[in-house]
Each structure stands twice: as C-alpha cells, then as structure tokens.
Length: 99
Image (tube, rainbow, N blue to C red):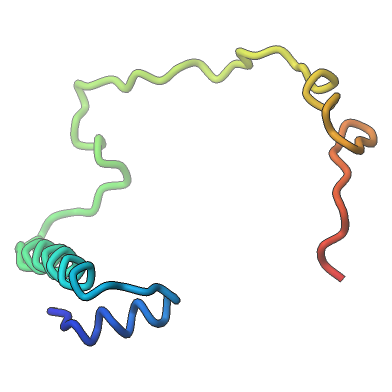
C-alpha cells in the first residue's frame, strides 16, 4: 500500500491539521516507509508457526525480573487531598460534566 500526497492532505484535513508542502512530503516518505515494513512482515511465511501468548514464552531458561506486588508507598491520602478544593469521604469532588 502506498499513499500519495493527496492521501496525506486528506488525512491531515480529517485530523484538522494544517501541513506545509514540505512537511507533507516528509510525512509521505515516513508513512510509506512504515507501510513497506508492514508489507515485508506480511510476506514472511508463518505457516505452521504457533501464535505465542507472550513473546518470552519460547524462552524457558530466562526468568523475568518482576518486582514483588507489595505496596511500597505509604497511604498519604489526607496529605495529598489538602490542596483539593472539595473532598468528601476520601474522594475528590468535581463539577458535574454530563447532564
């Protein structure tokens, strides 16, 4: 898939962006380069390759360095809420935005 300058202009218009012609050329080259990489990946024959649940699933001998799931910071709710204009039962009160 290759984009043209008119495609870039249409995308910019939809995104409400104003692009200079030079910037449009740069974006065209970058996006087409991205699509070239995607086409190369799609060209790889993956017949018989099982999908992985996680990228490291095939590396049994590598242990992941995960930190323990413990609270490491004290609960400073009152101190953190001192600067809030309105607080009730430990929650920040904000104006209603949905009617």
